[in-house]
Length: 114
Length: 115
Image (cartoon, each protein chain N blue to C red):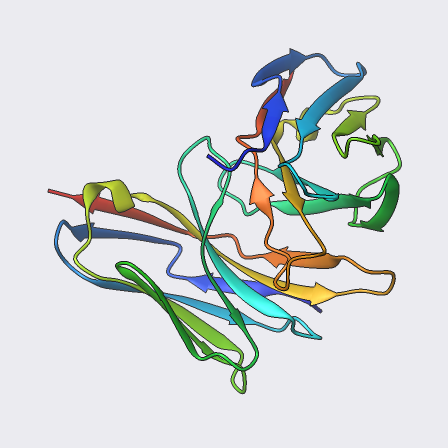
């Protein structure tokens, strides 16, 4: 176990709805990254938060947004859900104090959009 | 374009046999390369990490190699076990302005170990 937790484990939504996914980072980690992993694909980088500010973003539309809180936990919000948003959403925490900045992944949230 | 390509896409081997997975990348500037193991429905778990100056790294039965000149890496699994059945993902990291790193993931090699 990495110490990174995510909630909920599974979620079913319908098109057009909004969803919020949550992530608690490993103790001592100040950086959180979010990834979308479609079935049979590698994770795709959504964005990264460092000290409560967005610190890099992948090729995802603005309806994907996030927050990082003072305790370094994080939320991923997706508005106007589309069928293609169905995926495993992974959160990874890391510390820029570590020389290699290894990311530790949570178990993921499986989102299904109907 | 920053890309990470892995081969083969899938692989089936018998328990006890060895296998080698390949990773080619075009990511630049290169910071480090990691191999992750991802069990179905779980988050990836780091196996090895190598920086530019390292050309081999072992973690138990897993041995990774890196050739930074040709931008190739391999993951060798020795004496495979049923529990090795998983997706193995090659991830290359590059740093970007403002701090933090951006990871580029390969699509993974799906390994199945059978009796």
